[in-house]
Amino acid sequence: MKRHAEEGISFFQRYLTVWVLLCMAAGVLLGHFVPALPAALDRVTYARISLPMAVLIWVMIYPMMLKVDFPSIRNVGKNPKGLFVTWAVNWLVKPFTMYGLTALFLLGVFRTFIPQELAAGYLAGAVLLGAAPCTAMVFVWSRLTNGDPAYTVVQVATNDLILLVAFVPIVRFLLGVSQVTVPFDTLFLSVVLFVVIPLAGGVLTRLLVTRRRGRDYFETVFLRKFDPAATVGLLLTLVLIFMGQSEVILGNPVHILLIAVPLILQTFLIFFLAYGACKLLKLPHAVAAPAGMIGASNFFELAVAAAAALFGTASPAALAATVGVLTEVPVMLTLVKIANRTAP
Image (cartoon, rainbow, N blue to C red; front, side, top):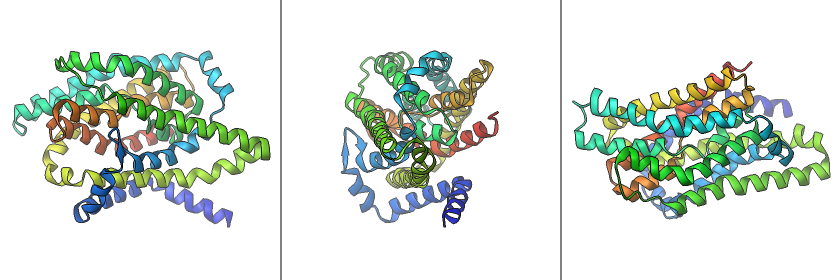
């Protein structure tokens, strides 16, 4: 019985990209033909964060947090090079390459397809994405690449601290917007929901189960029970995202494809910069892979909320930030495969 269950999980994860595409299509169809469903879910929000999506992200993050123990967090300081790479790529490189690539394509290569006023708005949304490294989903990518859970937590936590002071100056500099409105309620709530609460829950569960059943039971039996739950959480999150953005996708197919080009190129560029730097420094794969994933993925909740606050919910900037959400998961799954195939 156990063998069949493991084979089912293996089959499910082996074709994860297919399931992702199916869930994206299912989300678009549900949003278009059953519009009352996303409308109802949109009302279950706080500080612009969907609470149903928060629950699903917990389901994805929780298995990762179960692997974290405080002694391993303290040991992160003994190997700080991975943190330096993450900080340098995220804050000294990523926002500026995002601006450069997006301007090159939207204001240059695609100028005959996109009016300049719209292109400038799309550029603003891309800059907001580039200035906001990932907080929640990076735990999923780290888990899929067998990243060090304790190191990933520290990488994410320190990036969130830098985000508090660096986001506004970077956006103001790149966009020339003097009155940058940052939805701090969204920022702080995201950190609490996607870092503090699941980390506390995972560490507490680890302590309780280890004391009652022992470390061997925890690592060989208990942890494996959550593998399918994490994958299902990812797929249901995709359904929710694409269900809520179905009309945007169907109403702007050409512009979405054009905006996606520089965003996808940026994702690959930042991943290979961070991942490659870690490899040159001879850091272990469990540190290098999450370092690449944090820079490559984006804090899309903050970017979308900031775009809506600055330019309006129906603005080109908000649309561009939304395209970042739509392209992230398929592209990040590709990077997960690259990281796993290049692991020593």
